[in-house]
Length: 502
Image (cartoon, rainbow, N blue to C red; front, side, top):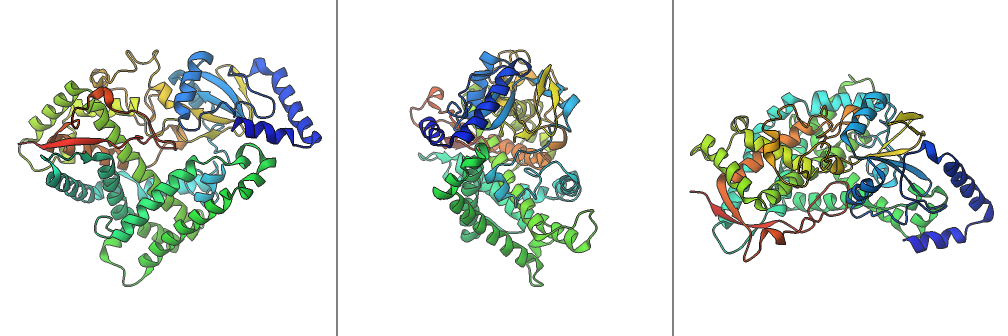
């Protein structure tokens, strides 16, 4: 990558190089006002150093050397990385509005119909109205409670499927099982479809989930060197992106046509898409809702819903199998409260303090979106005494915040007990030591739904089965590497032996 970048710039016309060198000179002259950071090269900045496979780890290690707020340059894009709870809180308290925009990135923009969603939309009146619609009508506490029977039914089927394979010599692929569970719940709550019973829907969902992750993790020259955007076209990346988006659009269109048909199945009534169509037809919103707006929101629900819960439960089971004492303790707590019932209910979970502490500890050590989605400044602001210019991309590295020794004792160890005596530490965006769903205006609106799925599924997995590593595998053999992408998925599938609890 570095060699290609340098070669291209050697071939650039002299006037263009002059412009870039002038900008580099200005940045060097004013460097005392900027946060510290690794030294970059003229023109390309730190792009040749950047690890796009595991950026949260790369930036975490850099922060140990350069401090909890540091600056970098990715091509023509200035970047600020915040890696401490203290500075994150200051940025929120003093500059939440200023640091609430989204940078324009080719992949997210294409997949979100040019920013007509919630996650990647620019901070604007449109975004505020669509977020209000989402929070009030689609993902409200009432809506989450109403979908409780769906969660219970899908978790029941998951436990039933695992029971058929338990007590055998074959391990259970929990990563695959949990992705299927999350997809099933999203299919029913958002689209009124059954993921389990229709192979075509399952195949389409799996394909789109893979495509969406690939798009969100893709590098496009246009994002960092606007003058070199033609490379994306020549290499075919733009064409491949457009084909993927067209397939997704066709799928969303098919769902819409099924929902507006007078012969639609009863399962589609009052699902999320049905509510969006009602809002469009009712003209009760401050913005005119178009079909593209609806498709963009569906993308958020589809991508966010399938990714977060399955990844979080997988990391939880991984952490517990590597910490047998914690595994035994949380199982004893669940089984003592639930007794002989066939399933753990959502009401039972409220009586499980250690289990709740396990969930928080997983969120601290293995946040599903370790860098959150990038933000962008809309005007000049001051953070930790440093002057941050407009159009600066800002990353909040919550992977690093979760390991900040100023906030956490023994930060690298999995210790759920740390939360038992600290009930004030919550994950809802007020305590900056633990912000897995973000904070402020850009906090994830699907938090309640994601936590509900995670808690119910994990509690039942721990209640119904005893879990062990397969064969002679030890806890030291468990690979903790993650796949590249916006969400933190385990690189190697988690495969465990399940024994039915009697």
